[in-house]
Image (cartoon, rainbow, N blue to C red; front, side, top):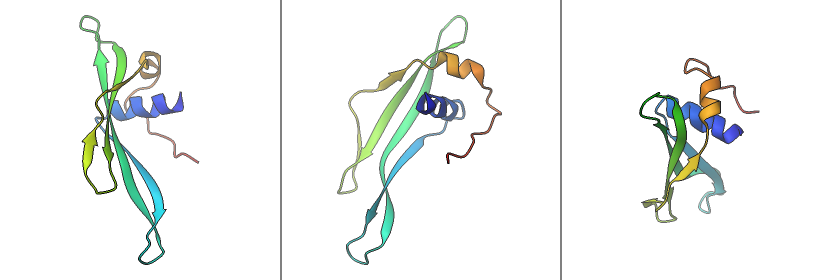
Length: 96
């Protein structure tokens, strides 16, 4: 539910989610953040009422050579109740 909540708020602001993984660099033995995937949420709405119907999330992954690839399928979430509860002016609380 928390993931759906965050993705729904990102979709309402037309923002993408970036998933990073920390790994150790073999050259200087320092940890670095490496981007692994980009999630692109998009709200699909009903035609007549304009209420949100579901959330479509498309993912772009990055392989070990640095090339970006679109995943062949999208992921769908029913977040209509989550989107109705919160307005777009509400700020996300920091994850602790």
